[in-house]
Structures are given as C-alpha cells and as structure tokens.
Length: 124
Length: 108
Image 1 (cartoon, chains in turn cyan, red):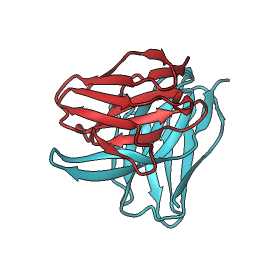
Image 2 (cartoon, each protein chain N blue to C red):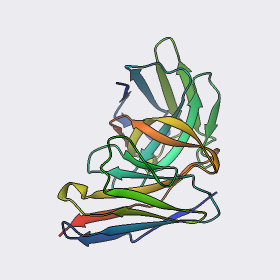
Image 3 (cartoon, rainbow over the protein chains, first blue to last red):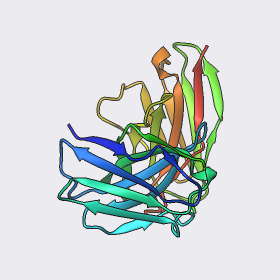
Image 4 (cartoon, helix red, strand yellow):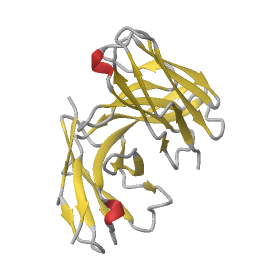
C-alpha cells in the first residue's frame, strides 16, 4: 500500500530556510497532486500548498511569498522549502496525497493518505 | 477565502451516545466538504468525503450530511476509541483549501 514519509531537520534557526522531503513508497507519485499541511503545537490544521507530479504548484496566499515546492519523479518524492522562518512556523508538517473526485456538485479534492508528520522547531 | 467554523469546539459524551458535530462555511460550497479524525500524536484520518461518502474502512457509525453552508458529522453510537479531534475541510475553492478549527470529543 502507498505510504508517505516526511524527512528533514527538526530544528531550524530563525530567518533560515526550512526544507522537508516527502518520500512516496508502494506506489507512483505520477498522476496525483500532493500537499503539505502543517499544525502548530496544540492548534489546528493549515494547508500550505500542493504540487502536481508534473511540477505545477498552488500555494496558500498567506505563505506564497516564502514557499517553494518541487517534485522529483525519478526519486518518487516531493519537497517543501519555507524561507525566512520565525517561531510562528514551528509546527508538525504533514505531507498528504490529494485524491480527486467527481460528484453532482462538480469535481473536488480530499486528503486520503497522510505521512506521520515531522515536528520542525524554529529556534536559535 | 472560505472560512470554516465548527461547533461545538469541544464536547464530552458517554459510550453509546449519539453525537453530532456541525461545520459551517462562509459561502456555498456545495458538497465539497470532508471530515477527518485526528488522535493525539497521529496524522488526521479521512472519515467522510464529499459531505456524505464514507471512506473505505471507516465504521458505519460515522455519517455525514449537508450541502451548501451547513454540514454535520454524526456518530450514531459513540465508542471509546472515537475520542479524538475532528476537523472539516472544504475543497470548493481548489486554489485555497481550508479547515475548520476542530472539535475535541472526549468520552465521559
């Protein structure tokens, strides 16, 4: 079965760049959209953005100026970079698969597979 | 942006109770509404997609309903393992997915 696994540094200094990778195993990264979602300690979920396997992206407007996502189909993985981090970026970061559907109301997306999440702390 | 508001923010109920959580959107989202369950230290788990479709493997005691701006998640007979935080999420705006703030469910 398809599994997702986040990896990257657990500690990042303020003003530096957070970099995470999500490795997809048990299936191909192709033909899907993939998202990053984060959750500050004790708080709710915030969608960061998604990337298609072809490389097209869409980011949360509140983070757009600092976010870059990329995909490596040969390695079956995709990545997140968040620049100029502050303590407010401390969170558990999840990668997830976007599953599309078509209904009488039109097409939509939900997150059907998630990684276990990785805690990134921003601190000097 | 489409804002999602859940109520209540927390609730406590007994095993066997019928529990309902409500999610309201700031604009019409049709049936592009999904529900997730999250247990402490775990990733969210999809329960219901497109307002009323039960995800494979999810117990039938979970049901979703609604359309437009008001949606509900109902647990017909609460089990101890249902203690968790529940989130709704809209995908009507495919350029900006948003979640509700969560509802924490405790078992008395």
